Length: 56
Length: 194
Image (tube, rainbow over all chains, first blue to last red; front, side, top):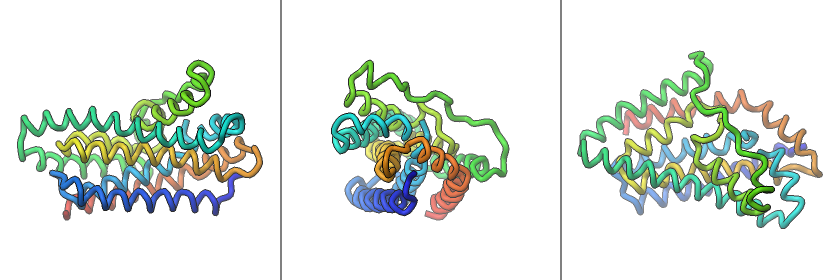
């Protein structure tokens, strides 16, 4: 049985690393769509991706 | 995926297998990001700055639509594919290449079943961004995080009861759907005001 706290910890840590990478990316890439827009889209990527552990 | 990869990582070196799975997800996301990014560059060349206006209108509207499905407000059949990653890959490709391949396949995003319709906005946004780096960043973040979620789930299993872990995660799909839908709505609002 999965430990919810452990799973939550892993997911939270992965999310934090992703958000830090997104913030770094925003500075480096200077995207056409704007830094904030890129940051929020990467955040959506992280939320959708991290929510799919059991999907085949 | 948790039910499949869980028993497999018991056979070989667990950390190597899980790292390869994340690497596969990152590679899959980055690969589709490059393809979508080039499509976006073509659109940028054709439309110029008008593409930014298209992005600012289409992406929030798409987020609104898919979030309504995820939140259960709109009842539409799933728009995403029903295909699953082939369970035979570790046999046909080899143990580690198969686990990498699973990550790659999941990282592509659009080739396998996913319960959240808001996912579909990611490739759309990657194209309409008209920027190769942004497209790769969006899709690679998705690919890596989807594979990382599998690794997190496998790592959190005590013993080898992967089927029970899988059932527990499946039981959380509906609340997670609402979370993804709500996040998509917030992101639509942030794009509009940014």
